[in-house]
Length: 414
Image (cartoon, rainbow, N blue to C red):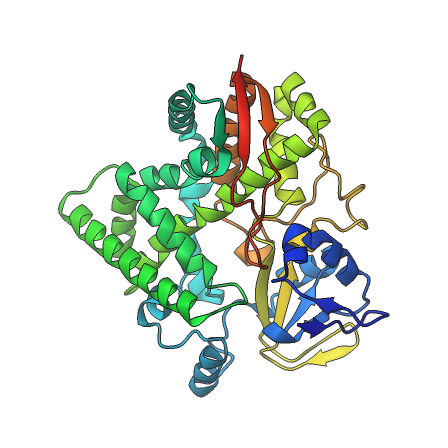
């Protein structure tokens, strides 16, 4: 537990509590009351919760994801032990060093290699494949009037689509999703030894799988992204291990966050039936509706940065290497920017949400994620005249991810 600094009264911020899991937004509203950043001692991080503060830190070129280049080797090793990132050879090799965890020229070089595959025009070519896959899933559920939306629909689409783009066989995608979730789970603040063991084993199995698939594609290239990225590697675009780390990151990023926002987006439509009706009456609103789903329940609520030099913010000086927390989920409910921020509005325009981040680390997969969602929700609302929530869902705990564990629905076809 940490006691808030910068607030008018003493208050405990407890992101692992049941109360926070049920409703983190009450805590976020309390954080926004403070004039200063909030120091969360448990994570040794200064948290920005207001929209303008979060956006400013994300865009500040002095803020970096990695401490490489601004800390000595001894300092980095000490921080690894402090954060329990040490003694994880596969995790250190393929997860702790990748596009997301790099900055400057290295980050720019890696981002350049894959940027073109994830532009709006590039991902639009996959719309027919997504539609076909979603239609097939809905056909398989046509004899069911009750489903778990998360496990039986949402969890199947993002991973299979990104898997097909890369060239991963359909039957292997569920295992990759499992590995991805086990790796991502260790990024939260409760880094137990058991979670550490699971994350390292998942990283090893994931890496070994990708190394084998890469070797197969080197012998037998196909019309898929892995084969195209092999050509990038041959031309010097990737250094040793960067190919595997990049492909693993694409697969991890293509799984969890979209599954989470699909679940929370469906829940929002059910909690605000007037908004679901608006979308039924005017399907052209699907684009703004999906953007509102990302704002209303940001699937990745929290990211960190470090200052690469000593800086002064809000009248306080911070030494080089200080960790700052960017609380995107709080920023996206800031009443200073969003009218009626706790209401879900499928017509909200403009919608300046920063669920995809900002600056150099702006999410590359945002176009594909939104396309997945547009196809899924349009298909659901066209096919089912009634969608009913059967029980109140429970959400994932912690700061790193936000989404329902399950979402039990009753469906009635048109």
